[in-house]
Image (cartoon, rainbow over all chains, first blue to last red; front, side):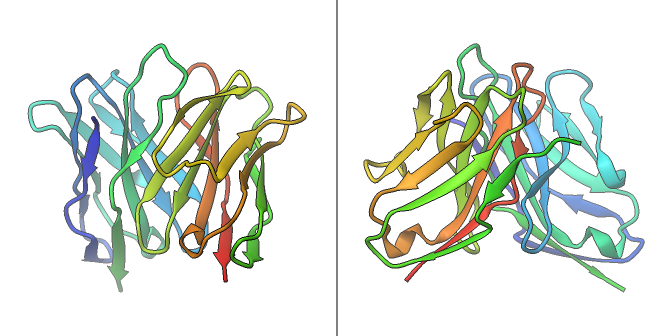
Length: 116
Length: 113
């Protein structure tokens, strides 16, 4: 079975500082990996995805993530935090296969606070 | 840009009542999903739907739940007899054949009193 672990349920950074949100996955087969962002009282928006192409993936709003198979990690980074980045971030894994499911398994989320 | 829509945005119901949550996926999407998020918890998979049948369901998706796509556009989740623990945000998602991503709707907040 697949699973996702997000270390740190709350992360606080200063505006302009590096953002690092950690995600480790468990999967018996090569996975697809995703980062979603959820702003207060809103739905889930895809930030970026890894689908077995380049291991360094760039997403929206200046975020990027690197797939590291040896570490089973897919950490999310942004060089310089902005106040508008304050939100909850979810890492998710999916197993691509010929069937119709490809359900997403989510981590518990990391709430990012950005201090002025 | 086309998007997944959900109605209502907020539903309040009494325990034991039936509720139907509605989703309108993007028109060329073929695979449909329901997820839920209990307040303060992670997003959980409920069910996936393809070619007018359930392709996978989680253990949360018991006999009280059902899904259908009655008219080829709407995708609905029905809870037959709601319980207090069904209170959550319910998200619909959809994707096309290529599986680049699942597109999520804004969610329906269900409150069971």
